[in-house]
Length: 138
Image (cartoon, rainbow, N blue to C red; front, top):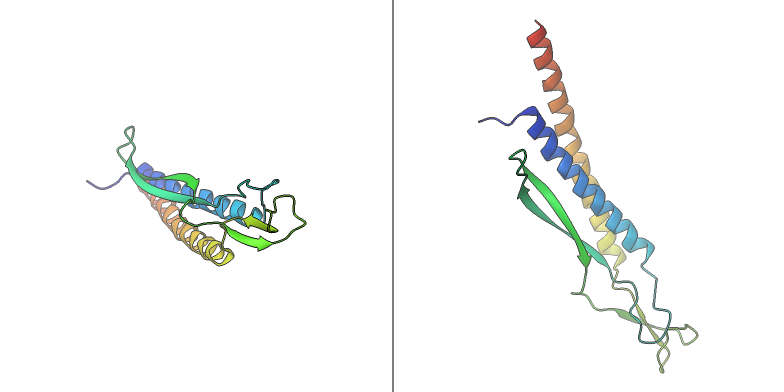
């Protein structure tokens, strides 16, 4: 059975949606990459990560992409010597977020490319839809 026009749009739309969310997560990580705690012992900003799953939409029967955002607890915080900071410990070190700019920029580039890859699918489906309507008018 071939997929319906709505299925094509639903699948491509779910892909665009999760990549949009991925871009938002990367932007949040970059914006908070220097946010330390406000007192000694307090955690700095935790890097966010996004994970994807392929789930069946019970209403349409389409397999759609879903996402979940969580904190990246696999990477530890770095430390910086900054004795004047309010979150500095007794030795003058401040725990800094577990955000790596290179990883974030790579994620940004990949999310952008994946988003761009979904756009032609929507354009093609729209053109097929228009052509079908013209044939039916025929």
